[in-house]
Each structure stands twice: as C-alpha cells, then as structure tokens.
Image 1 (tube, helix red, strand yellow):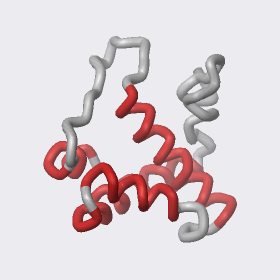
Image 2 (cartoon, helix red, strand yellow):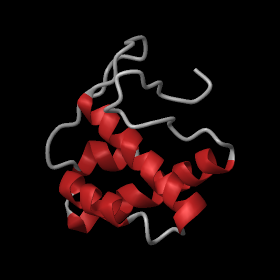
Image 3 (cartoon, rainbow, N blue to C red):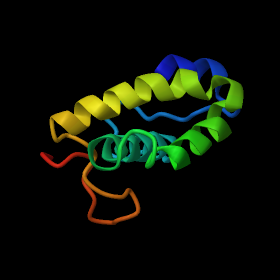
Image 4 (spheres, one colour):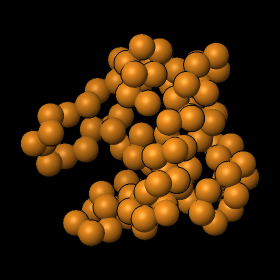
Length: 102
C-alpha cells in the first residue's frame, strides 16, 4: 500500500513523523479510506460500500494504479474490521481518536 502511494501518487503524499501527535491531511485520507473499506467489508459487502474509496484511489494514484493501492488497503481494512480495530470515527470530528482503544 505504501509502495503504491510512494511510486504512483499523482501528487506527493505528506506523512508526519511517528512521534507527531497530529495527523496530516494525507494520513487522514488514508485512514478514512481504510475505515470505509473495512465498514464495507464487515457490514455492506465488499463491493457496495467501496465504490467511493475506489474513486478516491483513482484520484490519488490514477485509474491505472488504483488496484495496486486498493488490494493491500482492503486486506488491511478487513483484518482491522475482523479484530474490531477500525479507526473509530470520522476525522472531521474534533473529539476523534484514531483508534477505539486509544
């Protein structure tokens, strides 16, 4: 997933240092995409809820490389959904934590 973002992103993606307590805009986008894929896999079926994420992926890396981003992202999302560790809420909420157990 990170290799696809690094090699094929149309614009450079900004990622903060590990010790940074704030989430960058690009990190937030990836977190929301993973959350939405996980919710789609767990509650809606893998295809129905993932259409918006697929369109977003095409905007990030181009339609030709979207699958290279979505396959590992979907695998991660499914694992997080199965273990109830999907990101907790929308990044837009001011009281949001990244994960439910934080």
